Image 1: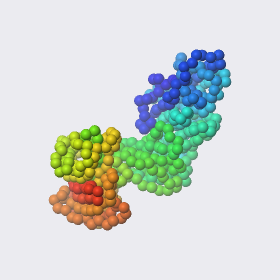
Image 2: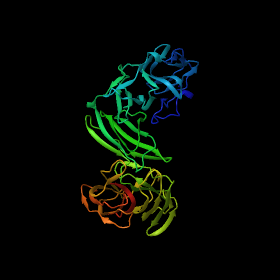
Image 3: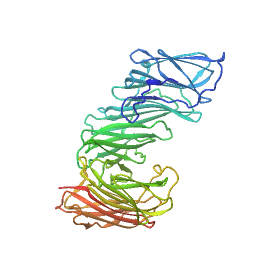
Image 4: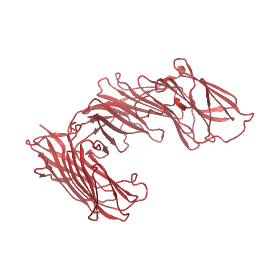
Length: 531
């Protein structure tokens, strides 16, 4: 095997930077003496400028899964193998390995060795890998090519990633019936950055002869995407990264990146055929990252229209707890989003945030954490009724929302086996949102519908009681918000926004279920109001 210092391990497939990685087998060839029937393997590389270079390469026996070592000497790799069928995968790098100008990915799914082999991977003969989108003005922002194969039960992949300044190339291969896939993914953006394409193309059994992949509007799903702020515009752009799951193919996780500012909106077209996506977005403001992650994979309907929002109000706390190794770990998220299926981590910075997390067990005080973002409490393993109390104050330069939290969660817990950090469970908590603008505001002087969804506690039952109140003067006075059931664990609340207010709405929420779980939380400035 030959990768050594030339493999760009410092750059990841999610970074949006040029990158290459050659996968290897974990199976070593058996110790054996050289035999007269063994054959010499010589692999040569020529980069795109015509310079002789040693390629990166792996040579794996298809019968046993063993990878045979290759020794680098100058611009060649050499090895000795017995006769048989092998998978040969290689990468030819042009330029500085940490800033390559060209990456060529070679794959031969079945190299039959019946005599000595002398093979040259000449990047000048490789074909550029590219995509064609429905837009004539969209240009590449980021791209990946990957070979994924299974040998002797092992999934092994090789990847190259490019940018406009780093061209990706490959050579067509013969076809095999064993698990062998070639995937190409590319993000393209319009000059105005109002429209983008995230395209993914899987090929089974070979590297295809045609390495120009075409996407049409009919096989793409349109997602109207809003990148909202928390009341203060971002400083420049941040990455919107979409992870790709090629159904049934596997491989190393690929991510396609495009730039986006907040607040802004983009029309993003996604490949819709047998491809799943999961996105995250973050931007920097006041030296703090404001990140939000989608939690579940999703697919889009070819020819259909969808919508997504990041940083969607109303904002407020959610909390998970882990119970194990004699300790309960309480981990609140201070400014989680109001929409289900997303996780907003922006509030979890100690800068500008003060407060406490307190834990009670069967009504008795266990302890108080002076860290408003975490509490670790020593407790007995037996089941008991717990109450976690969160008291938080915030004054930050990157968000106008969630300036104060007073919340408490009641739950029953017993120590669980395994890692308590890995086995955290959710407490009863609301997700409250509505048709807010991209700065997290609703209109003044009108009745405004709120969608109230309650996430059940892990192992909990349906909500048995629920109430919601709103304040337009930071909690000096409150009005009831009537709630109407609109589905399982969902309600609609119609709140009347007055003309007279302090530009914000505080929310006070209470709920309990039939399993002993309850939540009471007051969030000052959960969302904003516009005139």
